[in-house]
Image (cartoon, rainbow, N blue to C red; front, side, top):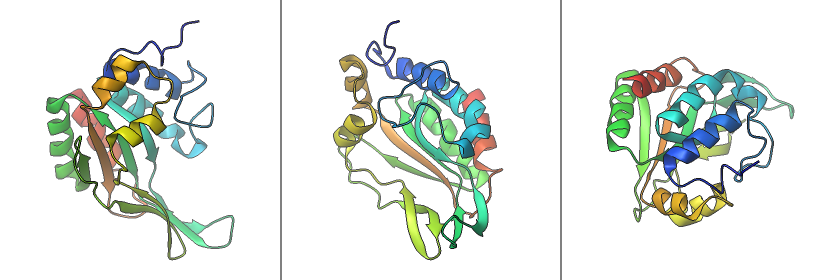
Length: 186
């Protein structure tokens, strides 16, 4: 079977491959160490796969989870958030508009732009364990997330906007995903 990642020519090809990975038709994704998405994101797969096919190639996401006792005895909480790549400026503007209406924070990093410092999206006790919205730079981020991807698709990614969506309310999981779904179907 041909490698859809290596054979990718465009960001649209990467979006299709990512959607297929999310839905279980492809066993691996070069930038991820597991063969399937984390269990906590299973309910997000339809929206994430549709976003990928529409041109927002998602590479990291998590649901909003209200505060609760974690495996280590600390109180954990999460904000709903998603990160990915867009080359279609009309899609980006639709996502910005829907996010603004839903009260979702949008962070963009353009090629060559300084990174936003990021926002905490997971905390354990008073410790930030995960942050979204920062970037070590396009080339470094692309090389870590898309190892083994076709050279033409990599060149196109280097012109893409790195886009992060974050619901600023801890634990809420019913704003970001409907807003994203509206943006990709308009």
